[in-house]
Image (tube, rainbow, N blue to C red; front, side, top):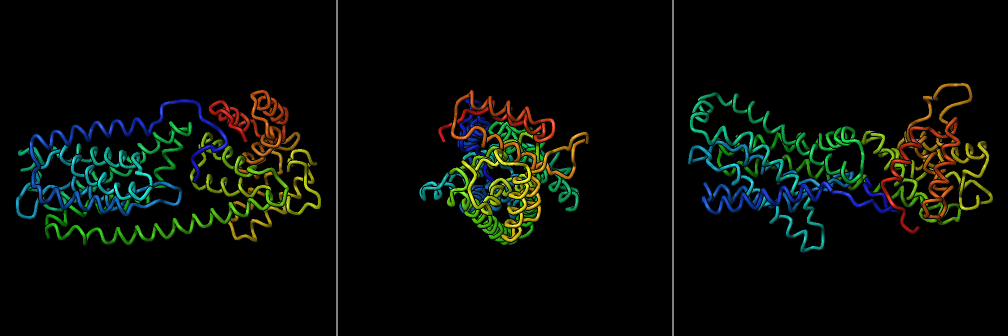
Length: 433
């Protein structure tokens, strides 16, 4: 899902991804220096884990909503952080900083082929994964490195070890979600709680697979040696292939919807870029209001296709500005657009949002209408705003459009959505259209 507000430039601010990269960079530098000075414990084991992390980074996965994840690489890194027993050498004595040095080295080595191929290194994702591994190592490695604690720990039955590693391993999923939500909050200005909920949901399936594989890796290494590493990661590889196929289907669906949304522009019914501008602003408002990820996807699709009903018009509306026509005409356009969406085989929720976008959020002398979805209210406000502003980019044009929306807040435009639009516009500067 697009995270950028394309027709606008954000005001200068501290980008959380930069802060994340700096923190991870400092940690990696310290870890490499400390490991070089003290020497690498069990270098053969470290080399095998580092190579597998690199391979996992090379075959990283782009999730359906454009989030990048390296399931095999992160699971292997977590396994190295949770490793307590070596096949022949007894206790795994590598330190917290060596864990960071080995796994970060593997991640950077795995990112190199992507850079050479002209793709992004995804340093933000690498930094996030480094900090997740460091957090898990910080919780678990002291138990192994302290002789007294390890003696008590080693005397327990394997089931106790499994329980402990599961608890520590499950820290990885919420920790990565917290870091990702923090970066998103700094870039998108959305409420942190809603963004965290979305990140937890987005990483739930793949995060559970990564955490469980990360727990199994040290157990397999303990029992069958380093040969257990590829055996344990095969199920995760198959899951990754399934995710990749699902992501490809989702991307194809979005591309189809984007192509369909341009029908009104090609036919001269709407201005070029109108659907994209409405969608980007609607998504920004959705984030500001804390909509969950699924409803954000519905909002994105509905925003792209909200004007398809104009294809039913014998004569195009000047500039495609539906705000200029009568309520009955807007309702007819919305109904026809919903029919087109249903015939296109898109989610039924999207058709309902498109159909309800012409409805006021409340009727005279009646309370707020609960049958009008929040997504419809957002599209109604943003569409009217873009129609009012037109191609103007001045501050006066924006203020005049906002004032026009405020005058309609009694029945037509939801005051919460209008207030959110004002907040979003305060954070950005319009660029030439």
